[in-house]
Structure formats: C-alpha cells, structure tokens
Length: 416
Image (tube, rainbow, N blue to C red; front, side, top):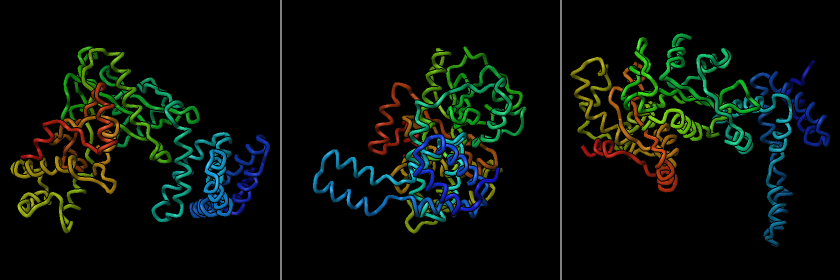
C-alpha cells in the first residue's frame, strides 16, 4: 500500500480526519496519516510538525469572541465555551490519531521528533505542550502495570533492558544475568497496555545488609550473593527512563514507592530503602562556577585544589588526599545551595528524588571511580533515603519551600 509521503498531503489527511464524523473511516485516515509520517524524510517530518504548529492552533477570532463573552457574562456556560475555543484543534487531531492501530506508540515517536527539534525551532513549543497534556492523561498511574523483570523474562524485553540502561551500562548478556538472576537482586518495570512490550521505566535493586557507599562491589563479577532474608537494606542503584518521547511524564515517583511497598511486603526484614545515585553534572557545575564573574562557591583560596583537579588527580593518592576536602565541600554546596533558574536544586537527580520525598542522606567519596564517574562527578555517588513514613512530609517541604531535606552529616560537610 502506498502512503502519502509529502507534508502537504499529510496536512490534507489531517484536515479530513478532523472533519470525519465516522469512527471507522477516521481510523483508516489516522492509520494512513501515521504511516505516511513514518515514511517521511527527517526534513519533511520537521515540515509537517511546523504545519501542526502553524495551522492547527486556536482560531483567534473565535477565541477573542469567547473572551469578550466571558468578560460580559462570567458564568460557567461562557467559561466552558471559552475553554472550548482555547483548545487547539491539534489536540483533537492527536486524540483521533491515537485511535489507529499502534497509534499511541506512533505518537510517542512523533513527540521524540518534536523534542529533537525544539531547541532549534521553539515555534514547536505549543505542539509539545499539547503532546504533554494528552500523554500525561494517557500514561497516568491508573493505566500503568508494574512487572518484575528477571532472568526468565522474554528475551525481547531483556534486550530492551540492556539497550535502555542509562546509568550503569550493561556490557553483555552475562552482565545482565549477574544483575537479574541472583537471589539478592530485583528489577521492576512499568508497562502500558498500549505498549505491552516496551518498558517505560525500570529500576534495578540490590538487597544488602547495610547501606552501600560504592557501586563497584554491587556489580562485581564473582561477588557472593546473600540470602534475601538476611538483607536489611534495599538499594535502588539504577533507574532508567526508556521512552524519549515521554520525557517530562513522571513515572519514577510511583515506581520507587510501589517497589518499596512490594519489597517490604515480600521481605518484612527490610528496614531501609535507599538509592546509590550518580551525580552526573557536578564537575560541569563547578566549571561554570569557577568561570563566573561572581562565583557562588569558588574562592581564590581554592586555586591549589583547582589546579590539582585539572590534572589526573585520581590516579595519585597524595593528590587525591589534597583535593578531597575541597571536593567534599564543593559537593555539599552543590547539593544544598546551588539552584537552577526555577530556584530548585541544580542537580537533576536530586530534583527527582527530593521531589519524590527522599532525604539526601550521604555523599560518598569514590562511590564511582570509573573514568566516567571521575570525569562527571569526581567519583562521588549519593544515597537518598526513602523513609516510607516521612516521604509525604519531605515532598511537601520540597514542593512548597524548595527545601533540600538532608541529613546532619551532609550539612556538616558544608560547615567544615
């Protein structure tokens, strides 16, 4: 079957789809439009997204009239008409496209294209907003299914776990087996009925006797597993979002809390739930701060330490000892005081866990001594603690006051 392969042809299909009253005919049009879009070149896809932005926004005349009517008569009826006038036809078009077989997945891929072009083409921002609005409804917690992932999970799912792992690369099937098969390891993923073979997000869990400070022992080849009933701590050591087209649609907060509850039910001996998290932007932040006209942290007295970290400091024990106090204090400042443009913590991983109600519990020196860990975070890793009795209180402190809930040990680092 030949599908339309030009942006203008897809525009005509989209117009016909919006005017089509019959559901069966609409499904055929939606299928043809999505198939046609998939066959476009990269440039023509961008052109079609531009058409969505330019020609499927609200009617300005109708919207202005609805605003005037509401000002004259501010009732629920005129408010409803104003709401209807303000909704862009683009949203209804996306809803109808979702009726096609495989429509949800096709739309997630289409949003990937929007995000890939958004920086260079900010005029696509309204299109992205409409996608976020609809995908947030379609992928809300009520539709998500949690599934355990283990060594018996079908291979096509396991292949995707290897591909989507974003924190600690899975280098081989043997590496994956070491993470899934032992009795003291767990993995859980969220799925959606419309994408039954596509994990949305997954978390890898290690069961341990104490809170770990480094990733290497957790992933070491040849390590000796412990009996699950001996474990007192569940460690969320890798959390990976899988679908780029669902960026900004939050699943992780639900996943971590549900996994913690399920683990506690199955293993009542567990007492502590923590992460072992990377700090992927620490040294990038430090570089920006030292280059700033008015640094928030870097001082003239730090010159010697800064000169040392510009070299291969981690390979020399004496140099590492020299820079450790400086880097510890820099990390504490980064977590407790450095902010982004919205007044939230500068660190994206911190924003995620603090927003979920976790507490910044411990900053671990040489938690990740790999070349990537040294390059990005000076080797630091962080424990965020999920105290199930405190997560709501911590979440409120963060959401309402942007408060970084942290342990006394972390605060002491910045005071030194």
